[in-house]
View 1 (cartoon, rainbow, N blue to C red):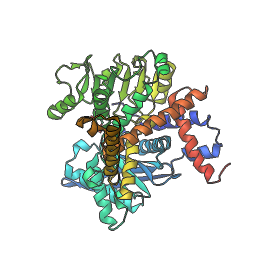
View 2 (view 1 turned 45 degrees about the vertical axis):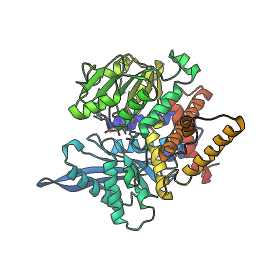
View 3 (view 1 turned 120 degrees about the vertical axis):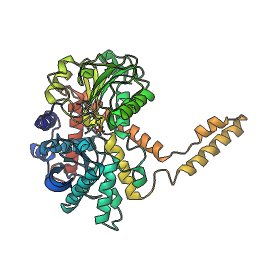
View 4 (view 1 turned 180 degrees about the horizontal axis):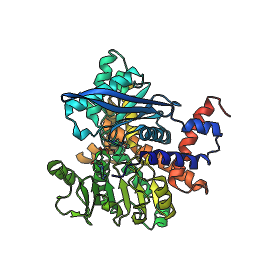
Length: 472
Ligand code: NAD
């Protein structure tokens, strides 16, 4: 696995600098927007077996222009201070872009979670949470973590329990972390949110005829040939929804153990079930094994979706990439240099800060739900159902016709929480895509969607300082 965290931080800064020049903001404000405000560097002991292990961990809060700050926690051996800082910065821009009113943050623990038992992981997670509490770096109005690479709703449940046990009676305490299990004040649709957001964003991009003409692609997501790297939370849901709802063909998958190809497209749910049972994708029926783990990225396809880790597409493999569109479902999967090279070659890159913003968007919905202490739809579902029912009955009466039971059930359905979450996410991803595309089209100096996305985000963060009267 290529690992160059400094490269990642450098990439984020380079991308920022390129876009900053087009924002018209004063340099002092740009410096403040770019700066990582707070970094907590931790070393704490945890008992592992008969010994004690010193655990290395971080939490970075990039920007306090809006509070709380927000960002995932990752468990990976790549974690270091610069990686966490880069990811925290990306969170600020991501939140601004999709109008989620938070500053950016990110946390990380430098461990390989596969090497620890569930008990040990729980001990590490709870100790990390104590540290965050002691340093005032967690809380519903301060800093709100979420899952990221190597963590899931299970870790969020441990964080919630630790926080509540130390802050008994805090009215909004359950909003201290998002991505929680639904049964522990989580929200329906959070698990799939990042992948579903990737689907909505890609679908929107390929629906614009003028743009597809430029790329030499047909309009619409149906039958698009897609390759996905990483079949974890983000990659699995992205691939599954593109296949089942978009009727796209997932022709290649790259995972840790290797990569596979099937020109007719994989059944993603069956593939994931196979991996769960056999521990590998390589033996899936109908799969053609490729030479190595990275080979699928170079397949002839329409859309490439790296959804594993950063720095996966570098100048080493960028010349071999054949996709016309790359959707950065992972954070920082393409280095700045490779990104510029691919853009020059005419590849359209949907940047990470936009395309994987579905997770934080639905986390925001979860936080709102927690603060309001009521499930979305609870107060209105039945009311809306009755209102639609009355309309259908009136139409029947005045047209002297009968609506079938099936149609009536569809027409009169009041929204559940999951319906509202999905529609709020769809609206967010579509609106943000057009904001970025409009910015790109409006300014001929802007060379790609990533720079346009940074310009939109930096201007939004900058406008908060303007409201504070720091500059006119
Ligand atoms: P995850 O741990 O659920 O899944 C990652 C997957 O990538 C795993 O299946 C792993 O085996 C695979 N993988 C690891 N190294 C690989 C390699 N070299 N080649 C191919 N596959 C490899 O993590 P996730 O939550 O899906 O996160 C993936 C990426 O998406 C990260 O960059 C993360 O920061 C980003 N992201 C996640 C969320 C979220 O809501 N989980 C939101 C926004 C962005």
